[in-house]
Image 1 (cartoon, rainbow, N blue to C red):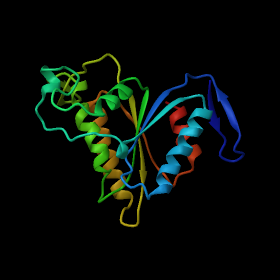
Image 2: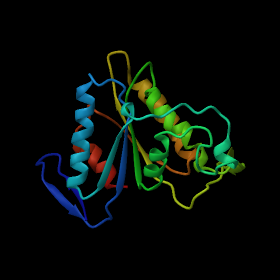
Image 3: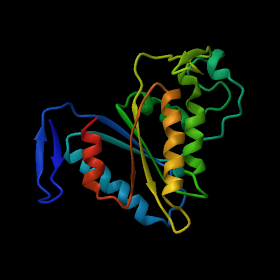
Amino acid sequence: MKRFYNRITSEITLNKERALIVTILNGNPWAENIAFDENIIKLSDALKLNNHTVKTLLLRDMDIRYCIGCFGCFDKTPGECSTVADDSREVRRDYMNSDLVIFASPIIMGYTSALLKKPTERNLGLLLPYGEIAQGETHHPARYDKYPQLGLLLEKNSDSDYEDVEIISDMYMRDAINFHATLCFTKLTSDPIEEVINEINSI
């Protein structure tokens, strides 16, 4: 059963919907940004209280290289990178075993961190190398029967505004289409954590 926070009383109410397997990709590149990491920990703890299974991947501590565009993941070693053996394999495994993947990052120069860009590119092998028409556009067809839904958690800074948030959200909506998913929510670390939990519980 899932649990819902009451924003006024902070009480938790139970819901009989299924619990989720959630993977959080923490794209915070700076260890000194303690507040961001603490927010992720609080979110993870709250999700566990709501009966969800949660795994957080701290990307800055992982060896994930940039995609070199060889497309070996399409044909040489379908679904896996044929060139670089690194921690992106763990990311892909956890990604595909999840019901929901949350991309979390501070806003840096109007976008998410490069740490989040790398696993998105390295996930290309999770699709087939062909093309199909979806929503009037050409996209790669699915390699697997099921893909996780996506969520986006951003930290604004003094140089960012809500237009930045909207642009980033639109880009991740496009990524969701590419990976046969839906971007279920975009939230800020400044939002009450119960709002984020309720977004997730409603999936």
